[in-house]
Length: 70
Image 1 (cartoon, one colour):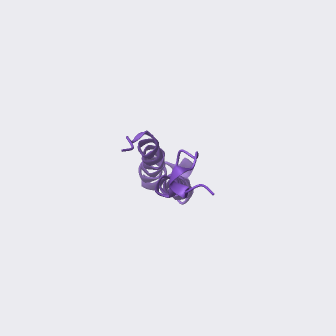
Image 2 (cartoon, one colour):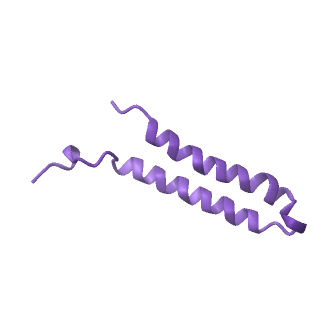
């Protein structure tokens, strides 16, 4: 049996949890955009807060995948 640290899978448990966290933040951002009660979503939630959360949800996994492993 192989040791789990010598597996061929390129991502470890920490990286997968960071990817899942980024996905959850993106989903929360899209949900926040739907909570806006202004016409056509032109309030603070639909124009500012929701897109910022979606952008953060995209950036976190990208940095997680491209970090340098030692």
